[in-house]
Length: 463
Image: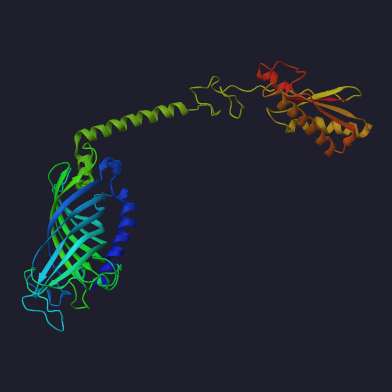
């Protein structure tokens, strides 16, 4: 398998995993559970196993022979994992390992494959670290609330530090024909991570990138502990994984492992790794106690809806519900107050304009200096007399007692100026009009009642 293709596939899968699955994990987890917060999602694991210098997909190895020709030896391999589960289908795992990889040829390797004449090689993996996307493929005990067995696949991208040693015989104890650690300082490994390696620099171990691809199965032993068994193929970009040999072949190895995984968090929460949302949905539909609870909830909602309907009923259509309407049966179109009773407005009294007489006050709404349309007739008549007699007029504005004195003083001036502006627009000379504001002073009725306050919101006209 071509390493470049594998690396591109792994990177694409990692991006999909990190961006797509992590964002949609909340949507994948059914809402009946209340989201990931209702589960335990963190776990740590310990694992140990063996390595082999070949992989299931076959191919050549850079030691110089076809993989099938190797008298395979096994090396130890062990490490730790930390995993975050985002849904019952997907998680991200940080994996760290160390160990050794061993292999030898039954026949002496000679030119052109390997000019050193080595029979065996041993690669020391000082450390290996990768970030893996873990996809859960299937479960057993489908209709149980919790699964007991989980099958999964994983793919990732990582970096590992290694140093190969080649021997003249096949028992890994003979003369070393290649080992950069025993060479002079100038022949040690450099600092490259990707690409071809050169033994120039000051490092005992060279860094290489690798792509782990594997499958496994987990057995739930308890609410906290699970048995984890798996197989991983590791494809590297290092053509010196086992030392000098074929420079056109990238190294590869596989490891078989077993270990224990420990779920972190409260024991009162279910482990998301073994959660079965379909089974839980099934139980939600079939469990009699849950069904009865849903029916009781429906009844409470129905009762609440009836109460709301009763509170919102308005028989006379005045905008006040029957429960709060103190004057039921109000004729349609009648202006009512908050208790549903008609509002009684004082009738404006228009006096004939005579020299030295007063016109009826101009009334205003609460906190307003806008003229009412009912005042236009009075003001038009006043304007006509002022133009005909070329006389002057005084406008005194007032306000009711709501609000501060300063505010009401300004409001009374605005009301007097509103009347003045109307007269000016009607052709009266502005110089013949005097507009004053007196705020809450000189009330004509009590400010303790709404009827009195309505009368105090006025502009008095004096000729």
